[in-house]
Amino acid sequence: MKKNRAAFLDRDGVLIREVGYLQDLKRVNFYCGNIEALKLLKQKKFKLIVVSNQSGVARGYFTEDFVRKTHRLIQKKLKKYKIKIDAFYYCPHHIRDVKIKKYFRNCFCRKPKPGMVLKAKKRFNIDLKNSFMIGDKLTDIKLGKNTGMKTFLLLTGYGREQKKMIDKDTKPDYICKNLLSAAKIIIKGEKNEKK
Ligand SMILES: [Mg+2]
Ligand SMILES: [Zn+2]
Image (cartoon, rainbow, N blue to C red; front, side, top):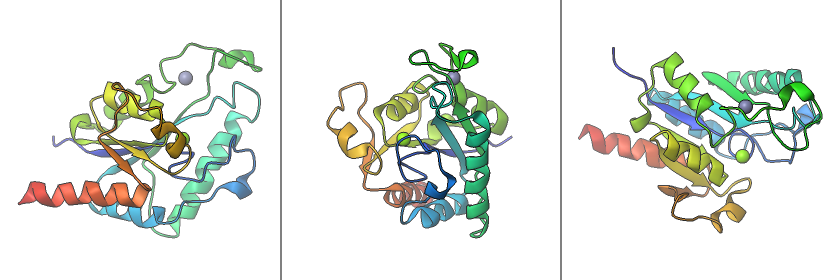
C-alpha cells in the first residue's frame, strides 16, 4: 500500500495565532495566508496533522475538554473552506508546576519526544522521510529531526526569538516567514519531483 505524506503542524504560533496560554475561544484566529497554505497542502494529498504541547492542562490553566473544544472550533472554522485537519494530537503533561496531579508525567508525547508523531505515523501509514514538521519553536524542529522529517521554522509565533537560539542540533532545513511560504516551498519540491 502506498504510504501517505503528512504536514505536521504545531498549533499555537503556526496554525493559529500565539496568544500565550489560550483560554478564550474568541482568541482562536488563523494567521494570514493559512487557509491558502492548508488548501495547497491538501491539494497535494498531504495529511494535515496537528501536534501540540498543551502543558496548560497540567498546570491547571485550562482543561482537556477546553483543548478539545478549541480543536472542534478550528475544524468548524476550516469547514467553511472545505478543509479538514486529519487529526489533532496534544500532550497535556508536564513535570514542573503541575497543579493537576494526574497530568504529572515524564511522558513520551511531549515535544520534542516523538510519541505523537509515531502515533500518527501508525494510524495514517505515513512516510516520515517525505513528510514535514512545521513549527515556531526549536522543540518542533528537534521533533522533526528526531523522527526523520524535513523541518521548517516559521517566524510567526515565537519563531523570531527562537531563531536566535538555533544550534547544530536544531538547525531547520528551512526558515520561512509563515505557513504559506512553507507550503509554497513544499509544493514546489513536489513539482520538481514529478519532472
Ligand atoms: Mg508553537
Ligand atoms: Zn505527554
